[in-house]
Structures are given as structure tokens and as C-alpha cells.
Amino acid sequence: MKNWRIVVTPGDGIGPEVMAAGAEVLDHAASRFGVGVTQLERPLGGNSIDRFGEPCTDEVFQDALDADAVLLAAVGGPKWEDPHAEFTPEEGVLRLRKGLELYANVRPVLVYDALVDQSPLRPEVVRGTDMVILRELIGGLYFGQPKEMRFIGGERGAVDTLAYRESEVRRIVERAFEWAAGRRRKVLSVDKFNVLVTGRFWREIANDVAAQHPDIEYDTMLADAFAAALVRQPTEYDVIVTENTFGDLLSDEAGVFTGSLGMLPSASLGDQGRALYEPVHGSAPDIAGQGIANPLGTILSVAMLFRHTFDQPQAAAAIETAVEHTLNDGFRTPDIGEEGARLVDTTSMTAAVIARIEGPAAG
Ligand code: IPM
Ligand code: MG
Image (cartoon, rainbow, N blue to C red; front, side, top):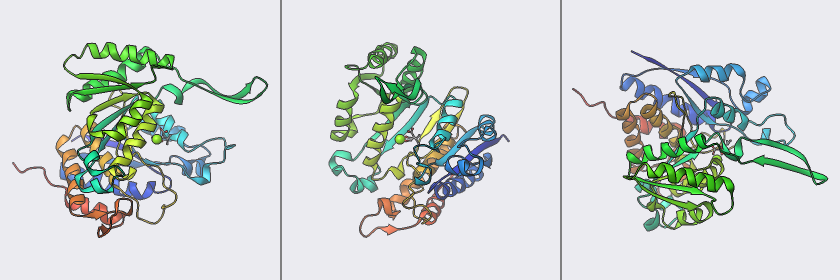
């Protein structure tokens, strides 16, 4: 039996709490479905800065490179927010994404029926929302050079650079079409065609890729118009593909539709089977250490790990169904808690999910 090696990085804030949940579900589902997994726990983010002076050491980076996948919880917190500090915890995450060449960040936004009333949008608007945001993850404004503080016109200033090569745009848009083929067969490419040269370039490449997929419905939209349309009719969208920074903003916007950012999983995929899985939420320092963080984003990220790294779609579906049943049975962490709900802590929520993981079917 193959033994998969997964680097797990609990990180900071609520990270260790939700990672404990994810690790438990990973072990449980692995033994249930006969998958061999070894978890290698490693420091990353603020805790790594404290211990080793940097957010991702060369050893941890090498371990991630050698592993089959990384499962990351969350990094950062007020302790590391000094603007003059040499490193930020987030640079640890960015080093892994960039170094492992994980260019395709997949963020599914699924609104569960049981949580429709928790959404800030009206139930009739949000019910049935099921989209995937494909965010380009290792190019664009996040990584373009130059990127520095400098004097501009005699005063202090700063520069970031938005740059894309054709191959970088092409591969993420290609991924969007692949993804759409397994879903409702609709791709929307989001850009700032009207203002940015990179926007015009992005659209040209996207149009070109779309022309090779006549069987998939394709549309384009300006990023600002899309930000507005998204809250008006979220059920319209299937697969959305966009630049790194737009994807960062839009996925947080779409994330609140689900009732809580704590619900959202993500996968960052590269070629050569490399992958990193993480909940979309941050380290939530305000509730860290209280044991009340929502573990579902991490648990659903584990489901994505089963699907995309282990190629175990049945196990992935079993975890996802268990989450749905847990919600239908009324279990709620405080972030999704409504009046009269069965309010539970991280540990009980996790136990409830594990108790509902079924399969594999006998025979
Ligand atoms: C995200 C986060 C990250 C980002 C941070 C932690 C670097 O906001 O995954 O969306 O900006 O990409
Ligand atoms: Mg973000």
C-alpha cells in the first residue's frame, strides 16, 4: 500500500485548534478507506519566526517539497504585525505557494441549505449558490518585481508590480475550463480590461483558450461589475477565473455568503501533482485558544486532499456528506450559530462529523 506523506502546518491563532480537527478526520477517513497516510507536523508562520527567526525555514520548505501534499491551517496575528519587522508570517505561506509552483488556487463556495438563514444575503437570493473561484496564485501583484519602498518624485513611496506572462495566464484559464467540464460547464473570466494592460492581455488569452472549448459556456466581466453582480445573483456563477489579487478579494466576498468564512476550504494545485490544502479563513486571534473555532473549512480541505491528491473521490464525498449531515442535525459553532441552535465547540463539531462519515460501501 502506498504511504502518502503529508506535511501539516498548524500555524498560529486558531490554526492548531482547527488542525487538530483536520488531522483527526484525515486519520479517520484514511483508515476507513484503506489509505496509508503519515502526517509530518512542521512549524510555519509566526510561531516559526519566534523559534527560528523566519516564517518558513529551508528544512520545512524541503519537507514540503518532498511530501505528497501540505495541509495548512492559518498563520499570522497581532504579535507579528510590526511594519518594521524583517518577516511576516504570511511570507511563509507565500514561500510554499511559490516554491511548490501552486498556481491554481481552487476555492469552492457552496451554500448549505441548513445555513441559508446565516447568510447576510436573503435566503431566496443565496439558496443554491455553488461556485468555484479559480484564483491565479503565484503571479500578478503578489509577486511582480520590482516590489519595494522607494523615493518617488523626492518623497517616500512604494511600488508593487502587476505582470503576467502568457503561459501563466493560459495555464490557469485552461484549468478553469477543465474544472467547468466536471460541473455546470460555465466559465466566467474576471479582469480589468478597461483600465489595465494586464487586463487586456488576460482577456485576449482567456478568449483564445475559450475558443478551444466551444462546448463550455464562456463569458467575461470587469472585476468591479462582478463584485456587484456576485451579491445580486450568486447562483448564476459556476467557475470563475481571475488574477491573484482580484481572486483574493472576491473569494472573501463570496465566502461570507456561506454564513461564515470558517466554512470554506481551498486547494492550491500545481503541475506534477503538487498540492497544498488550507481553509480560507485566517488565524482569528480574537477567538484563539477558546476551542470554539469552526473546523469545517479545514475538514472540507481534507476532503479536497482525498479527492485531488489521493484520488479517493468516494472518501472525499463521504467527508462532505458527513459535514452536510452534521449541519442538518443542527450542530453549530458560534460563528454559524443561530438562536435555538445546538452550539458546540471545535472538538464536538469534529466528533459529530467523524461519527457521520460512512463507507466505503461493502462488497
Ligand atoms: C488568502 C490569504 C493570503 C493571501 C495571505 C495569508 C497571504 O488572504 O489565502 O486569501 O493574501 O493570499
Ligand atoms: Mg485572502
